Length: 298
Image (cartoon, rainbow, N blue to C red):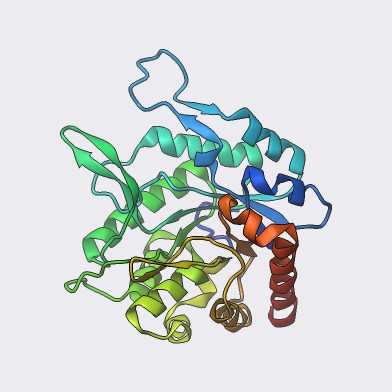
């Protein structure tokens, strides 16, 4: 693949799951899933940029990495630390680590959220502690495009941007979300990771049609989709990854799969703390239903 490829030349992986230690016994069963979506930031310790030459900045967490060694499954990388919408300089060491990880595990593509987690503080930056909503502004678009181009060039891998749930809106945004995502793809050479549960969250909280949103997106740029569940929190519907997707998310998946010609994977996300509620049988049911949609509509 060339660095300008948004993932269309990647293999059609099928149905995968977001990797965490809780699902290690499940993925150990042959054929349980087709691939793993790995959040590398959970598999390493970032000791910070001020190590002063005393040691490596990034070190493995052995128990988590051992799970990958044992799985033998294809992988994709889903990052949470790039902070693509931050108005601070790109962290080249972090991007180098993204590249090293992708090369080490032969990741078919890399992805990150449309959000920022690093904020300016004095002459440096500090972590906000959570993903913060980015307005759909031209300035933010330019920041995201520039950073995505740098990542693509440095990693020589396809790069996808994920739509995020947002719990605040900005009345003076320059464009709608769909236009922002379409422009990002056109200007950066990247593709889309379309999180259908994030879309559902926003549709519930702000009263619009998720299916109409799909009509506004360039679905040819969608390489991966996420499915998940959520919960009510403080009067809002939140993306909590709490178990099997609700029916409206399945409806969105069926709508999208038949219209996204370059879709390469469907990833089920759930937080490991909810495993006692859903169980491995419940996880298997989600994978089975997603495979049915994949085969029927693709």
